[in-house]
Length: 329
Ligand SMILES: *Cc1c(COP(=O)(O)O)cnc(C)c1O
Image 1 (cartoon, rainbow, N blue to C red):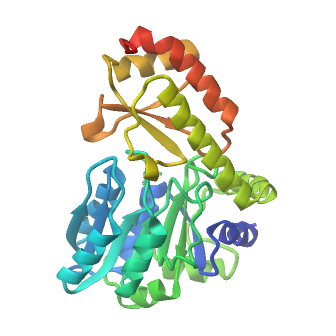
Image 2 (tube, helix red, strand yellow):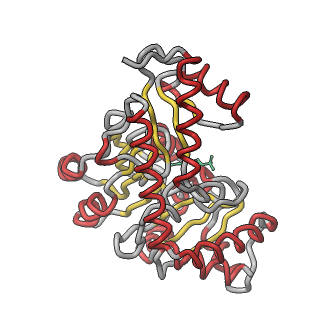
Image 3 (cartoon, helix red, strand yellow):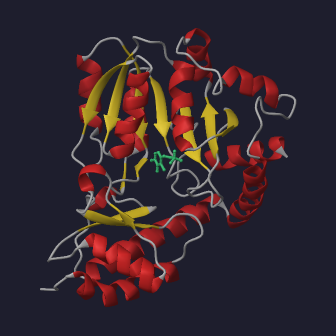
């Protein structure tokens, strides 16, 4: 089963690289990406556009990397030219950390473009694709991403408990000399055990069973169709929000097709809104994280989601918005 699921995951990752199922949440996968490829003192460029980009950098810093931060305003995508300048101006960078889809702001980075910049400098590219892979197109090999991380509870439609991580030949080269401390996340252990159809530690078996079912569904629908459906669903969410008079938080040409962030405006109390939607309408929306707390709310639409689901959310929002202080002008 492990071999079958791994093979199916490689189809969705569009990769021939090694791929491992690690027991843990997505953040564990991010830690694995860092500790398996870097050494304390390594200089790392952190391209961050929100909460999760900052978390990726924090993990690297915690394990002793010298993190060079390149942060963009929240709601904006990373600018490839700024990444090029950072790589030109700062010598000795060994790896670049990039979030494909920033769940906290509802922004999708142009990873193809960013990767071509990073690979132009031949740097190791570590990607947080936790809320994009399996929902938004990410051809791992074509875009030359060295370590790519996703998590079972996002577009994969199964309970939390697994991180899925691909590892390129260049990442293996880095791994050979990487000295950050690691035990549970060690890729060498994962590879040795996978040869025998096993994992080094007890795997989240129940989640693997669930994933095996969802991968059948996904491959039956087809990756192209899944990506197109998310594009339609994302557009429906953005159009719906605008038709209710709600401003979108993310710059629109980089708006995410897996999560839509909406700014509070016209007297709207987003916490009140989320509470009424949850308690009276059984619809759970997300709030803002960190400095966006109370500033935005988010509609998650990844995985088993269709236009009709979004239309229902919008119909309910229309009713609840005035109850949460929103005045349409
Ligand atoms: C959800 C998410 C994470 C964190 O994953 P956990 O499974 O909660 O550890 C990290 N990055 C992004 C982009 C995410 O969407």
